[in-house]
Amino acid sequence: MLKKYSIKILTNFFIVIIIFGLDRISKLYVLNLAETDQYVNIYINKFLNFHLIWNTGVGFGLFSSDTNFYYNLITLLIILINVIILIMIFKSSNYKFFLLLIILGGSLGNLFDRIYYKAVPDFLDLHYNDFHWYIFNVADIFITVGIICLIFAELFLNRKEN
Image (tube, rainbow, N blue to C red; front, side, top):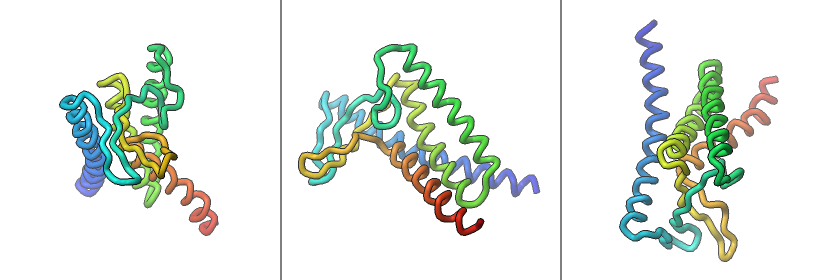
């Protein structure tokens, strides 16, 4: 029983580490480009560019601030949210469990950057003609997909179960 439980914990830890690793590799790649060229603005195709910006706020640059107090307060709030997600992971099962792991992996990627760099490097610029979406990173993709899937699950799957 203990062996089965420890294998499950290691598997879940591995999922979080893979997501964290994908995020770190993508950010390190872009940061290395920035170190070499001093500026990153790479045209990939007519819908995607790499354009490096430093985000001191939360998702999509919300609550960006130059004040250390607000930055540290937001960082502490993010740490608290990660602890809550961890508690929710231990209390959930099936698909919710997996979706929370995805969200945690992405959130830890951005939290690492907030602590290490004092800002999060965002570089994926989706656009169509002159309309540009917010610039984001790989961790943001995992967080967003996990949250959207949780919302859809709550709206549609739980309704069927009830």
